[in-house]
Image (cartoon, rainbow over all chains, first blue to last red):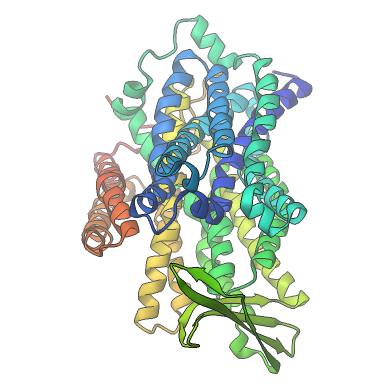
Amino acid sequence: MKNKSAIRSVIMASSVGTLIEWYDFYIFGSLAMVISTKFFPQSNPTAAFLSTLATFAAGFVVRPFGALFFGRLGDMIGRKYTFMATLLLMGGSTFLIGCVPDYKTIGFFAPLIVLILRLLQGLALGGEYGGAATYVAEHSPKNERGYWTSWIQTTATVGLFVSLTVILITRKTLGVDEFENWGWRIPFWISIIMVIISFIIRKNMNESPVYAKIKAEGKSSSNPLKDSFGNRFNFKFVLLALFGATMGQGVIWYTGQFYAMSFIGKVCEISSEQTDTIMAIALLLGTPLFIVFGKLSDKIGRKKIMMLGMLLAIISYRPIYNKIYQTTNCEKKVLITEKIISKKSDPIVKDKIVDSIRTTVMRMNYSDGTIKTITAKDTLTLSHEIKPNKEIKKSIELNRIDYWILILLVFIQIIFVTMVYGPIAAFLVELFPTRIRYTSMSLPYHIGNGIFGGLLPTVATYLVTTAKTKNNPEWYLNGLWYPIIVGSICFIIGMIYLDKNDNKIEE
Amino acid sequence: MENIKKYLGIVWIATGLTVGYFNVMIMGLPKLQTGKQEDLVFAIINLTILTPIVVGGLVTFGYYALKNEFKKNGESK
């Protein structure tokens, strides 16, 4: 058994690298609006097509392929070198995205290069997680695997938090105009410094002792893909891991961290600054719970905690989201003042036509301190003809009490995320034997998280839009049917088929 | 419990087929014809990658359940 300080070094080497990978993956998503204006102008159909491909392909398709590619390598040449390779691939791609000249400078090549780099990011992420979780678990004492691997589990949430913070600080320091002009590149460049530090730390670590032993004994797999998925006995556990655990984990993780953000920002129309800080505070408060539930899973078992988290989420999503909607619904608040400010810009000459942009801002104050702002932009032609409103933006600033109510409601969802996600690395590691562990655990994780979780925004939007078209009075809750149904199927399969004796870790 | 595990296999196969129908007939083919770039990319990925994984996975899982592969301490050939 290793001493605590040696395990701490392993945790640090693994967690910092995985955190950076998540950071790299998220900044692209968090800066999607700026990136799309720089690289993927909607006026160009090819660029718009590449933009859509970058969104879908990196999240859904490439991650499982990364899991297969790097998982195979990790089982053949070792965990350490494989997850060093994924780190460099991710860090290099992220840094280069920050260096690519924009569409105005190099035309079609700009979106194409960004798409390729984004795909490489997805590939690297697919290979990273399984390696880090396996590496940590294989260094940990048997009765503390849940605790030590839970540090790896914090990295996805901390990575999201760090990416939001870096963007927020950069934007505040440079100002909105400078940030949108060139400052958005800084979060991408910062990545390379973190990657170099993490690479040096990882380089000095030893190979996993469990893997080194089987390798020395000549027991490692020469064809991990065939041994993982061509072997019926192992393949049934891959399916069980997917449908009995990672599928539900994926939708609960996405609902708590991403759907909540999109719901507050888009459906409830809360200002982007309040939405970001609500998410950041809830994530910060919730993150230590990954460790709590990871540690608890060593004592009472992984299955109980994961299934309870799933059940609580399924039962409470609709009441939670209904409360969020009602708390922010201005129709139920008392309007006290309404002020309209109209401003006309200097004439803009485009294609020999002289237009002005008229911005009309309507500011409404409510008795509870909530402020709603509606900004409409019209185009005024030289003959003072008004073209229809092209752009209307609504933004709500909540009062302090409602703001903290929303933080609490997101925090509750983060608790569910930590219950389901905290113990899952140890659970997956223990389900498969050392010789094919990297490959076998990576695939169900990335299909569950990437595909089932990644589908959530698209399916939820479809369900909400359909309900709205049909005048369903609770249209805003309809997007939740996706995580509720997928989570319920996963809960039933997990409860019935998962067995605490399905433990194949070789000491 | 072992019998429940076994016969629920039929439910998982049926679920897989239902999801397949939904993915192809509602989320897949109609989106190919909307003319929107985003819908087209999503429909292609959905029909060629997501649906085979979800349907194939659930049907295989159900089949294994029916064959009693998930029997407690059960070993297969």
